Amino acid sequence: MDDVSDKVAYFQAITGLDDPDLCTEILQAHGWDLELAISSFTGSNPPDDDPPSSGPGPRQLAAGPPPPPPPPTPNAGGPSLTWRIITLPVSVISGGLGLVSGAIGLGMWMAGGVLSYSLGMVGLGPGSGRRGGGGGEDSSRLVSVSAAATEAMEFVASFEREYAAAAGRPNFVSEGFMDALQRSRNAFKLLFVYLHSPDHPDTPLFCEQTLCSEALAAFVNENFVAWGGSIRASEGFKMSNSLKASRFPFCAVVMAATNQRIALLQQVEGPKSPEEMLTILQRVLEESGPVLVSARLEAEERRTNTRLREEQDAAYRAALEADQARERQRREEQERLEREAAEAERKRKEEEEARERAEREAAEKAAALAKLREEKALSLGAEPEKGPNVTQVLVRFPTGERKERRFQSDTTIQSLYDYVDSLGCLEMGNYTLVSNFPRVSYGSDKFSLSLKEAGLHPQASLFVELNS
Image (cartoon, rainbow, N blue to C red; front, side, top):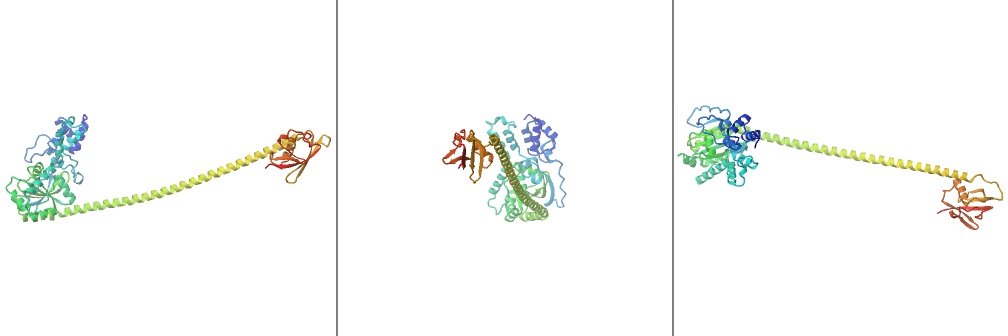
């Protein structure tokens, strides 16, 4: 990655530091090697009695303002409810994989191995170019992801193996401290912490007679989430430093606080009998009970409010969908009515236009027919007076009506049809003039014959025969 700002942003996202200048100084101190800087930052905390280093070490970066010292107790030799706030080491928080970030404000922390593997996958880590033969190196990085859980599982297995014959045993969870802390928070219980010192002479007897007593184990399993760790392991050692364990066997009762801290409610150092431990734990439960009850009630209230909001949202969405469906149905019905009205209007206009067109065509046809009749009447000329060259023609219509007119003997049969057409009694071209004695049809083949040539001179009687 050649962009400095991207490296600073990655470093801030992994470590949770808000100061970009401080992140830049740390990266510069490690030669801008992102993986090396994060590995150094997420490394183990130095013990509390180590002298402070001159540079910005991991403990200084993570801790912030030092927690207030615990109040003095009246009986220094016996256990007491301390309610002391303790800042956890960065490595312990990072070992929890950020699982408690949303619940108790611990931020998004990731183990160095996760970053190494992730950066290597996208070509940002220093070993990204050795993908082919570096399978062993990648595997070793992945092991660190579950290192805290691995240590916890090894401790639980070892403890159960060593005290298998005991009447009872605390159900230590097989997960890292931060995961156990989150588990206790989710269950609205306190976290019972046991730091195991295998080399201490009081440890075997305390584990066998006190910790594994049937009454104490049952009480712890019912009322607490139990987490144990060996001080030989990394996380157990860091927790012993954070809790300032000075004497073993060591037990503590803690609960989640905010800003990467826990509240130490009780610590018990040195061997104790089962009765003493029960008394101490019962007193812790009694005094911290209101806090747990309040937290449980608040969570239940949040869940109830969330459920009510979800139900209200669901009811609102259902009502909104119903309203939208009704509005959609109303709109569709309105559109359908509008389409039907538009279709009816279109048909009405078409019918009206067709009627007007038919009337216009009929009027035009009637006018043309009247004009044609007028022209045919004019083409006949004036009716001639009686004379030797004048033919008298009588026309009988199917209705019984008779029409008579004189024509020049050289007038053609076509003129007889023009005369009948000019009368307006029949449809032009839909009839034929015939004579009965003898029966002769004067069709279109005889239109050019004169009346004399057709044998109709000096007089003739013709019938109008309609064409079928």
